[in-house]
Image 1 (tube, rainbow, N blue to C red):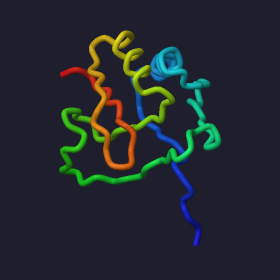
Image 2: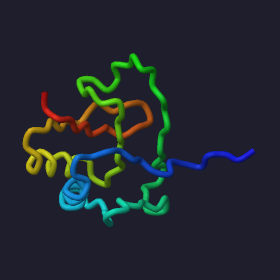
Image 3: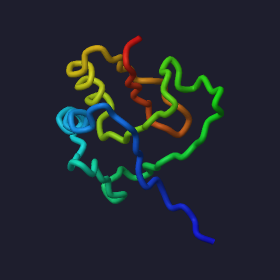
Length: 114
């Protein structure tokens, strides 16, 4: 039987994909190539990095206070540096670093401010 080997991509709609891609390139170094987005080779990831696939129940509160039906986690080389960059470059957003979870790094949480 064929098996899934990893996450093949994250795709979502945007009212202005080119501007959004340019923002991610400028502030987080995402190697965006329009119109195809960005690619990340597994060999470029830190040792032990992994992708997670997890469907949640429609009634979950896990994503709150965001009203969105999805969440995207990015692997960065310097979470503190990413947090500082985002706080200085993205007015109207809330950027916080969450608590360390068992076996994981501390997550960086970026949301539109309420």
